[in-house]
Image (cartoon, rainbow, N blue to C red):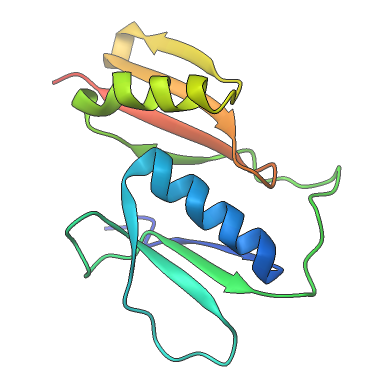
Length: 128
């Protein structure tokens, strides 16, 4: 079975701090155990789960702001339907622009927005 294990964002350390705070606030993830790598960083886990780090943040001074020919469109996180209103409220309180879409054929709501460094993010809420 193929599934995404994690995403990795590499950026200068001050940018990582901003990105870490963004994902922790919006997706209820928390900093957890991380191997002792040479470069600083964080591994973010779903709250209460220190086994499955979903987001790896790695210090790198070789990465710059996104360029026009970046081909990654977005990363998607499945979020509990019970968290939908809270996420919308967080986005609005932080003045983060988002687009909401409802897909009737798969019974799901999607929210699309950008993280602090311009990566596209999708939150998908599936109805059972």
